Image 1 (cartoon, rainbow, N blue to C red):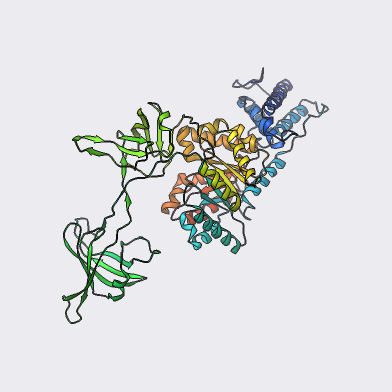
Image 2 (cartoon, rainbow, N blue to C red):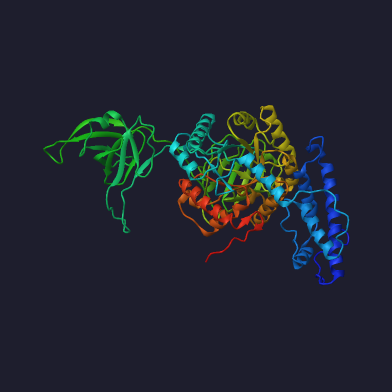
Amino acid sequence: MVQNLRVNSAPTPLDTLPGRDRLLEDMQRLRAAVTASAERRLAAMRDCFPPDGAGASARNLAHYLGLREHDLRTVQVELAALGLSSLGRGESHVLANLDQVIAWLQRAADRSASAPLSLPIATRAHNNGVLARRAEALFGVPPAKRQTRIMVTLPTEASWNESLVRELVQGGMDCARINCAHDDRGTWRAMIANVRKAAESFQRECRVLMDLAGPKIRTGPLARRPMVKHLRPPRDDYGRVTGPCDVLLVPDDNATIHDAGDPVLRVPRQALEVVGPGDRFAFVDCRGKDRFIEVIGMQGNGWHCHCPQSTWLGAGTEMTLQHRRPDASDDFVALGSFALPPFPAEAVKIELAAGDRLRLTERALEGRPAQSDPGDTQMLVPAIISCTYPGLIRQLSPGQAVWFDDGKIGCVVESVDGGDALLRVTETGGRKVALKADKGINFPGAAFPIPALSTKDRRDLEFAAQHSDMVGLSFIRSGAEVSALLDALADAGRPNLGVVLKIETAQAVKQLPDILFRIAEHRSAGVMIARGDLAVEIGAARLAEIQEEILWLCEAAHVPVIWATQVLDTLARKGLTSRPEITDAAMGVRAECVMLNKGPRIVEAVRILGEILTRMQAHQQKKFSLLRALHW
């Protein structure tokens, strides 16, 4: 705090020269304190900079941090009363903003002949240009009518569905994100090829971000159970069957047809080659009931059929093809039999509600739901799920909070026994929630000695260095981890590859100044506000405040930002929009890029997001409100 700088006190009248003199002295002391604080901070961080010292972006960040050491609310009110800058929009040009205010106060006090201020700091326009150039180096040139880019997380389907990728690029996708926590190199290579091909066909640029998994702790696999397929005829409100169940029979050697809509049964191709309308497949279902499926007609590569009664089918169910005699409507002749092949195994369901127990283990066990103890029907054995990171559970203590799947399931540790921890479920949103495999696990407040780059991350980094335009590091926690990533890129021969640092832990928030100093002079580096995990780590109540502070600090460091996690999520998944999601998407215009996650309606989400961002950029630039003419 600057000595004698007045804060949180009642403003005094400024319509007299003494009032302006006092405010001028306050601003001069503030400037001196800001520059002194910045020099101390830069001296402590000198190992982050080249031999000739910190550049303009790092210095501006240091000045901003020095400015925000003080409570400036009273001074802001007094400056605004004089029609001067309230200091609330000077992130990109801290000293230039202070100097301009001081110069106007000097003129008001008739001191225009005072010696010029030192340090020729760049103006807002210049530093905003620096930020724009860095965003262009990282994300590419923005579209003609929209400054904020759109990034989309690609689904696995993007590796084989070229038309989907073309629709995304045509609809406005500027960057494609590949999550290295999923799929493999062959899939990634196909995704990238489709992106490059689509971008070339539309004569536009679409950058590729490969997001390393980082030290994310996830749930292990679930046990599988033999798949039983239930064919359900439709019923009315009284439970009466109103028609047959539609079924599609396809050749068992056709791998391109997936279950979508009507149930699909795979049968030998030879059977489908001799079948015709009116024929049927007779069988005894899993419950011992006589059933049949009637052939109606051709549908694409298969046959459309009707099943008139509720039926349960399993692997090995014996099906007999019966050909209808042309001269008798109810007379059939058997042409042969075959057994249904196994259906794809389905994961068991672990459904949890508040009050349930869950065992988290580091043992290589498949997850299972709660079940009764065979020796005691009154004793319930808790559900169990494994943790992918070995040795971590032994570091837990009773009372530690544990959250699964971006905060959908909250728990607390009750006890720890070796490599197992017994958790009590505390929060599921008032309903039962399914815990699935490969979902993130968060331990708010805990700090584990986990390396930023795993062995897998380093292998994936080598691939990314050869094929992508930028690489992202998840769960960054400190400036030292940033340096480790930059060193790894240098070792891979791509020291200037674009870098995206994902801020999603409480440690990263605390260390954000250090993290930004490490990339303040990097030509192509940005920050992603990964709000899902971040909300779990710091609490939903603090997220709104922290995401604002991250935006401010990044603007001060001239570092571009990606606004991420659950943007238009309901629209991408279900095709529905909501007022809160539209408002949240509109706030993304203050970032240089907005990220959408995958979903069945992702193409529509890209189109609508593009329209929102285009409209909002006429009203907002960072914290600066733009007064476009209103047409009512």
